[in-house]
Amino acid sequence: MSDPLMSKSQFKVWFLIPLIVFLGLIVMFFARLGKDTNVVFDNALNRPVPEFNLPLLSDPDIKVTNADLPKTPFIINVWGSWCPTCYEEHPFFMELHQQQVPIVGVNYKDELDKAQEYLTNGGDPYVFSFRDFDGSFAIDLGLTGAPESFIVDTQGNIRQHIVGEISADNWQSRIKPCMDLLTEMGQKQAALDTPEITKQIAEVCK
Image (cartoon, rainbow, N blue to C red):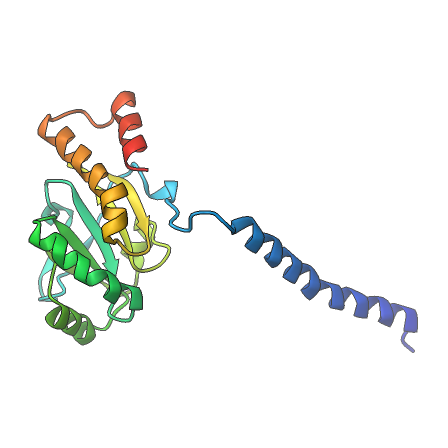
């Protein structure tokens, strides 16, 4: 015969577990209030673009690698036709394309025909896009969701991580100053790994 006191104790324990989890979520929610959600994750910064050998979106029979990346500062943009915010971001990318800002697209976990249709209908702002169908490159890159973008210097190192869409506002306030500095350093052929330069880049590209 089961002990009634033991059954009541077990019931109280099982009742308290979801309550504790709920209270923990409430604490986390209030801790985030008033804070910038456009977080820059340090684990994506100051390291080379991960090695890749992946199919070109426009012609999957052709593979592209790191050797095909622009030699000037550029944006890596992770996007998908399934991503609503990518559609909001896309017109501004077309503006950047008109300004000759180099953007490399990473088509993330997408269907080939839908991804190609996305660019056919909305225009193609990318130097090229390659397919990351299983998401392995994006994981190596440090992706937390789409859209996300990464600013890369002339030596192929990631210097800025933008979570969410790129818009006219954060372009002017955060991203363009970073790219301008990286372009200036590249033109001077400055060593980008010295403590002084690294500190300057970190301050501008935060």
